[in-house]
Length: 83
Image (tube, rainbow, N blue to C red; front, side):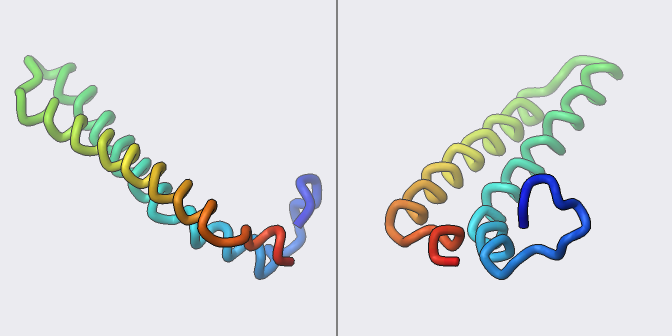
């Protein structure tokens, strides 16, 4: 799928690349959710240590998944290159 063709269906290589990145995407979504929760909590009052721990845990998960993605990409050929 080219960068400018918005109506084309994703290729098998595009879907494979998304599947490889899915754990990182999910970790980033959890991190975003915890950040939003923290902001909403801060508007209503003081932020608890538990809220801060949730954000730190989500940040560590993003870092862990980023390293795992890099390891997966360096171990195997890219699905985009194989197509």
